[in-house]
Image: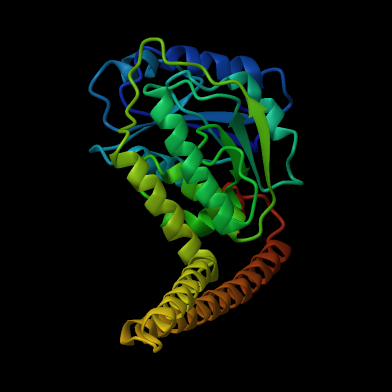
Length: 326
């Protein structure tokens, strides 16, 4: 709902078969936001629901609906929402009613100081709770080790972030559930300020979880490794190199103790350790150079936009949209 001509907050709800909860989620969002002074919009991105999700909301005039022509996945719906949103700050919340919309104003309090604010769930309340809790704990610990950051909740579905930053890493967002993890890691790995706010998390009363315990857990692990490799490759290659070096030293000592000479396999392990280390250094230099070039290009674009705004003082909504990209 707009309170002035410029939309400050875009609240995106990706949906797929959420007829049981979508009406309440939308109503809860409006109740929470009406207590604030923000101008906002609510955007539903439907990923080809086969139930009555759209029928529940299509006659409302307080939301904007975007429909995918074919099912692409939760991550694809989120990407569409980011691209089509009008606000400078984007809030994402699931449409299944598991996240409290009342926490959205609390997340927004930390802008513009922070670039991303995540709702960190106090407990796991999904299906297969024991397995999910262990799997997510393991993946979160892996991410904390590789990023050297404390991450209370890696894959929370309630998060707020600056659109201008998210657009830089839209290319990295996958189509599936690991999209939210990718967003979190993109900000962390590139040095942006990320905060976590404790929130409640509710079990699904009527809708069914779409999380696949094996396929999606594997996808989350691959996402963590891929994102660290994209932005901080030395954190992947260096531990592996050190492990192989330690393995080579241990095996060499054992061989000297047993047969009093070094084996060919010992040399192979040491060589593998050295090659992986060199690959890590090279990858880290490539990433650093890419970031430097990207920073220079961004600075040039900002300067050009500044010159344009000085020569054209009249307000134009399309120009404002262009500015928000940077």
